[in-house]
Length: 133
Image (cartoon, rainbow, N blue to C red; front, side, top):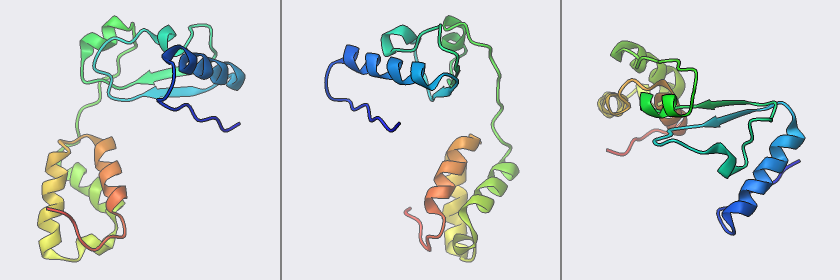
């Protein structure tokens, strides 16, 4: 089943569509990334009676507590590990130029040790032979 829920239309309709999709799936994992405030999941069609698992990421411990989450704190990568992850994901094209290495190191610094951000940025640059400054 391949259903697209667009931002167009009524919020209640979208919540109903999501609720129907999740109930038909049975078991699922739903990831809510970068949550900044408490969400009332029922408003989005996510019911407690579902058999799925919900994972959310947040920089706010208060948000996690308000949503009654099991908290798993993940520390940012140390600089050396962050650089290794970036290098492994981006591939050798960018690693062969001294000029590009300086830019790549700056990009890794801006990712502040967040492994998911590092991986996404590096994968998006994989196979390229230049980087924006």
